[in-house]
Length: 316
Image (cartoon, rainbow, N blue to C red; front, side):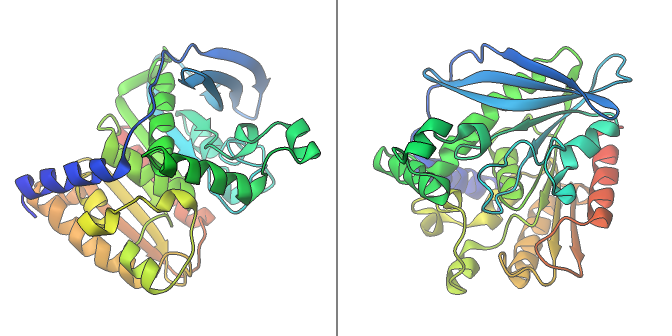
């Protein structure tokens, strides 16, 4: 696909995403500061819409001196709505999801936000206890359907909020805006891919078990998180077009050969298309795939390889 065709497809995908929320000044507030092993964990609150605020953990290395590359670490789904930002921030019981904390110990300033419907972005505890608001998957469904009714989508909302979070990260005095990355597993990988496509401030993205051809997902009748379903997307393109349009910026896709959530063969097909786009952009060395024997996971070995790759791309 040549550049004019990619531009046309990008415009068509933007049309599919629909209307984006207004974003005010973030007006960042520090809620708490905690000492962790090798870094400081700061709980931040900031505006993502005029009447809506979100929370994220900002992880800052103890030995920081001057500016460091910044990383946005996006949490997975796993049906665990009580856990969001706490996964990558190293506060959950699921160690393979602690990639934000692990990257901070390698010297990065890392921001771990909640996506809507997770952790601090659920209805209040009082509402949940009283049964006056939907909870869990029902709340995720509600916020997704509400956006469809208003000419938008949950994916659009996630993108808007992640851009606001990236604004917060880049505003930190000790983050260099010349070296920014994003990493995520599963839903987090899906969002890392979309954010890299949408916001060209991202220099390098690690997408762990988070993409496949949507046509294959539908063919296999695999149900997914609600943000996956962007209205009309399959009439104008697929995730191969999203990833191809990230070129020439750096992209790593990791995937298990036994992943039953994102069909592995469709990921290989997608990677072939993306490789061609990177070759056309004279940037083939900036696109890598890591297929491993395993399922829908982010193992110690794969995480270590991903961190080494980020070090190379972001100059650590």
